[in-house]
Length: 59
Picture 1 (tube, helix red, strand yellow):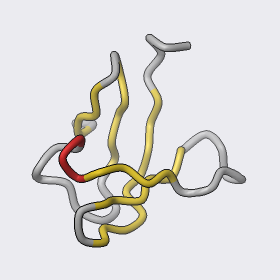
Picture 2: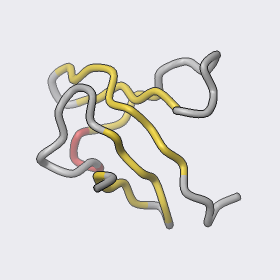
Picture 3: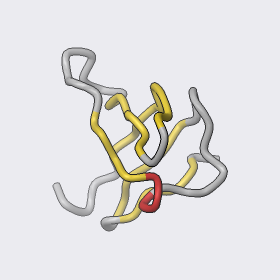
Picture 4: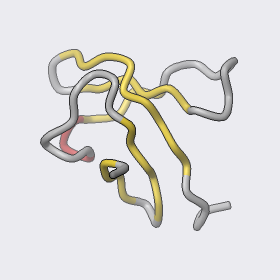
């Protein structure tokens, strides 16, 4: 599970934090993540992939 890719969509950006929605779990609460851990170029609606303990934009 740790090495699997997890896909998120950026729901909102509020100051130093972004709220991410897990794509394959519609019932999950938004995940609050510090902006410092995310790519600088994210925006609301962007698709993010979490893999090997790092977040990156899904191209």
